Length: 221
Image (cartoon, rainbow, N blue to C red; front, side, top):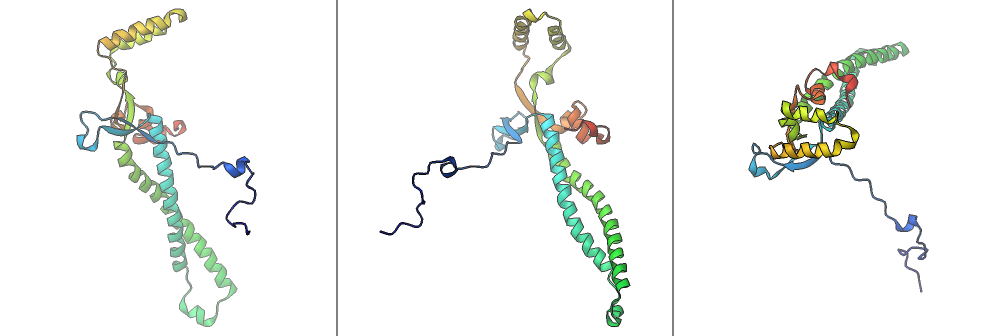
């Protein structure tokens, strides 16, 4: 009886390499669902997608910007190479006379010079192009924030600062009592969201992206 060619050679091989199927690691979500607010469009659903914090938002902006710049520069290299070849192309009559070694060397230097000048200008345009493409969607993107942080008044701030002055042995009981008092007074610790543009001026990461980035480059995530 002939053996089926599709059957494995060793049916008793139960090693991990033969029995375990490897899957690619899942890609973590950049944004997670949060309940929509009163100002959100109800037809869009009860949830909105928001970055987990401003650092995740800023990191995503930088990665997106770099990818667009890289893609733009790849296209610019091709375009500059074609442009340099056309500009440095020898006149038609030299093809009739016959090319010389000096002519080929001169064309090589010309193409290298034109390519460098063209690509330098293109790189600056790619940076501006990438920023313009990322700026609008990320400016309107939502970031998770704590309601308590948004609604914190001076009285509540004094309470939380006082936590640091309480002895370690009494901190837990003191903090529980203060949190209970804040909740009774309407101080909400739940998570909400706001657009990145609403955090401009109050959040360092958002300020580094939407504000003066030159002052924040060394602190970028």
